[in-house]
Length: 405
Length: 164
Image (cartoon, rainbow over all chains, first blue to last red; front, side):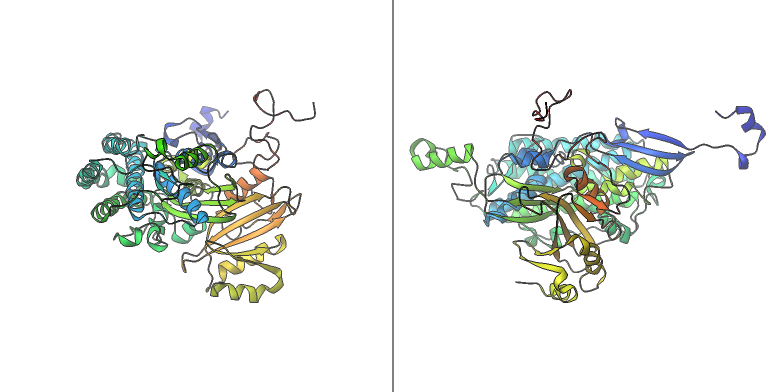
């Protein structure tokens, strides 16, 4: 231990300092879950950051090898639990590509509406949580108010608030219920007004600006090298969005802007998400306008359950298909596929190898949060103030359930 | 149907790489572990290819086929918006050179693959377990590792190891 009197006698230039190892987490309110950061500190400066993950590891990929394709949907819900429909969609699209089936147009519209709603849900959380990490509690309460509306919508449409499992192979589980379209429209009217409120509350707040502007800058080439994707990459100025560049579902039929910023600091990553919500609202409104009538799932009895449930009582064949589908699942042709979608956090990829059976031979999830979190390690996270590291972690928006799979 | 950008790769590497054929989603190239780094560097640095984004890197266990292990690289070019899949088979005990020098994002992907499959990435700066704890024995994603794990003091529902 340093003697206090020694410190007082010597000047600041030859003061005795000692490096400290600090454990941040695994239970810490600012880490957004069970994340542990081992920090090497020199005074208030973080010299080295090492994220220790795996506290929430559930072995999703190992479990998937023992589950049928339909049973895997609840597992995908639990990856990024803030926005389950996106996770469902990536997996469903991968399996559909292997099966070589085309989903009805109405189902594609419903899927896009649901994923965009879930994108808003995910962004709302982080848009409120980042200021909260920096000490501004109020805005989180407001964003939670809007998220509650979304949760109610999810419950109305899918029957579940969080783990929806709504998007299935071949379409969606149920058609939109009566009145859902009006409720979604109502939400789309309200949200942009509320976004202005958040910006008034936070985006011009001097404390927030000082804590985020110019903090945690990631250069575009570094961002690509680190494999960042989604808003984190676009905040650094890289104009890349899978929805626009490799359109899936009906994203090529709707108009929207890809939001990019220039600096790549914490503030840009935050404001990028606010603006993306506006674009999501635009996409949803166009989808509601254009959505055609028709089926909400493919008409293949070996893959999708019958739409007309009365048939189960009178048609032997329907009953057999229903039983087989429930008990054994469906077979997927031999092959492999990698499908990437633009999830709220970035590129969500599913790599599935099928050996021709009812269960995948291998399923790999390319979890965007896992890759994004890696940016904290190395030169981006080092040589910052400890308080700025919290801002950086928050602005990268990792969901630990997805990091740990 | 082979995309045009692949011709340059095949011309340059000739017999060092294999043609994996067109998949449902993207073209496949197979490569032996000793040529992985050379190939990846070429794919990233030649302007017509510029695969600057490593989407994903993962391991596959083809037990009981041999060579048993496979490392799969999913590459993407933000500049040209094309994708490519590289496959690298490795025999037991599996050793594959690291590509962290080319894409730093490979760091955690390789640690995960090492943790789950025991594939050693030679030259990796920090190759240790990422999900499992350091004292954990075995590699959980291998096909011969039981789904419920092995029985021990913390896991009464696991399978018997067969030794006792």
